[in-house]
Amino acid sequence: MDGPASVAAGNGMSKEGDGFLSRVSERAKATRLGNITAARSVADAVRTSLGPRGMDKMVQTETGDVLVTNDGATILEKMNVQHPAAKTLVQLSKAQDIEAGDGTTSVVVICGALLEASLELLEIGIHPTIISECFQIGLDKSMGVLESMSSPVDLENREELVRAASTSLNSKVVAQHASLLAPLSVDAVLSIAGDERQGADLRNIRIVKKLAGTVDETELIPGLLLNQSAESGASGPTRIEKAKIALIQFQLSPPKTDMENSVVVQDYAAMDRILKEERTYILQLVKKIKATGANVLLIQKSILRDAVTDLSLHFLAKVKIMAVTDIERDEIEFISKTLDCVPIASPEALSADKLGKAELVEEVSFGTEKVIKVTGVSTSPDKPKTVSVLLRGSSQMVLDEAERSIHDAMCVVRCLVKKRAMIPGGAAPEMEVSVQLAKLAKQLPGHQGEWIRPRRNSGHTRLDELGPHGAGFRVLQVSVSGSMPRLWRSFLTRWRKTPGSTQSKS
Image (cartoon, rainbow, N blue to C red; front, side):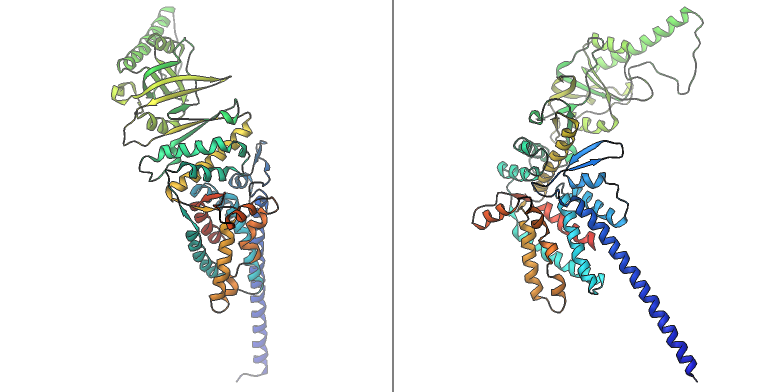
């Protein structure tokens, strides 16, 4: 029989269990609050850089370099974020940069707003799983709303593409050069997209930065640009017409032993024999190269020995062969793709069918800076096309920001090639989604409608941020009056951003 003592003991155990569950619940709430606060702090850090008149951030890196930019992905990449939840937003911005190339700031701001809205629901006792399910319902509705707002794009309409690229540049440091960089980005992406326009791989666009001149002097080169200069120590040629180009991965210098050894020379006769052997070895290499018909050499950089010597440069100059050294290993693939040539690993593999052809190879000087320009490249029709961009700037900071800006513009055009639709900008999609979610909330049964109902800091966040900086409202007024909106964004940028913000929060 259970006596009073056993009942009292049972009540004591029940109270202890309730206390334990209460402590666990409090720890879970504190953990969720800490995660949301850390993620919101990251969103707040980039919030003021959003929009055409957003403020730039000055970031000092670990090495002491100073960076001035308003690109969300770059700012978050340079921030030393330690909190796991905050790192999720950094990874979200990186994913948006890879997928769409633009919207890296707004995707973080929207995610921070959704987390703030989730915090309101958590405080009234709604379970996190239910909140995630309701957000998924809202996501499905939002994707349909964005799809209905989109307008088809004709890739033959160059002005429409330039307008979309200009929109992504309007909030950048180099916005005053948008009239040059936007058409250049469109031409570059359409050049590599091919006639079928099925897709564009931005790895087929090479950007070479040169610290001289201004951004206005940036140009698109339908060929190849190399950051190196021609070897002219022995008065070798710096300009070759009707070029036949050999991309070699061996060195025009005497061979060395595999291990550290010392060669002891007893007399001058032995020294003369060594020098004669070296001369004969290099001369045979130059004769093999000349026999293939090559008149331009691109020599891969080596850490084991010198790529060329004074003697090899002398022989090359004698036979009118232009030599370009210090080609990096990671450049080999792009060069071979552009010139339609095959990298040659050894002298025995030299043959005429492995050479690339071009109308002109010349060394171009910009003050103290030099580049190698290869134009008139002939490639096979089935090979992917490549182009190069010569980016000029008055300082390294301007060059870096211009490179990031032109990359974002190219990503926008790439998105239009992949998904041929555009959508109005100026926070118009976010406001339309907010309106449609409010209508959906009235139709859903139970408490789901209340939980899906847009909060002030979810759908209205971007307009609140754009408003104080004077952007967005004019665009909405123009569209309401019946005219075409003057601010357009790539549909794929918004389409990728919406699920990214929601799923990252979940």
